Image: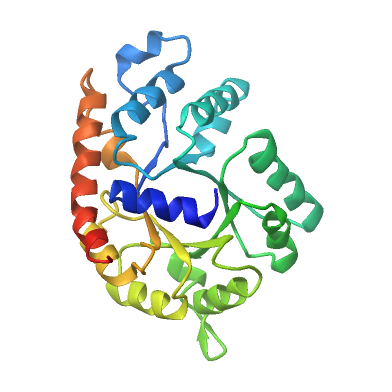
Length: 270
């Protein structure tokens, strides 16, 4: 998906909501377990319930890979079911030497035609650049995450800046705002402001809203740009809003609520 298409969808839906399909067999409603493909049955219902308010779906591949062949089939069926005007993210966090990264890119851009993939940049430019060779595809690089362990490396001094700052500046030079996004955690206002000032044009995939303590107003007020510029991911707070037979209805209500919080910020951009 080209950037212009993503921006068009954001303004059309007045939303920057990304729904994370982190589908765990142990957490989906028990009545779905009798289905031939419980994971796909759950995902299909969630997509139907939330697509009106959603501009992106993020599939965390770990939850599918753990199921073996059945999981990969469920992932393929889910990807095929997502409407074509909604941005798709393979949250796979790949990154390896060049020829291996090239195969990962082919996996998630050709075999499973996602619009984007998350990538870990620890091994440097030759592990990231293979992902950037595919027109219309996006590489979403881990920048500043919201987990507790982020302080172990990301917040350590590296010369005259912190390590995550060096990563952001360096990786941004490998591509453009048309094919690189960054994962930026939602929990600290000051860091959102700082990263947006550093990277005024890039899109950010922002986890940490909801269960991890971040909130929509903080992200939108401090990290949006003229194109919206953020995809705010919510997983558990939407897909597991209910564990009963009303799970899809409750997911719809939660997605609508989040979209409503985002709408006024998007209208302010015009």
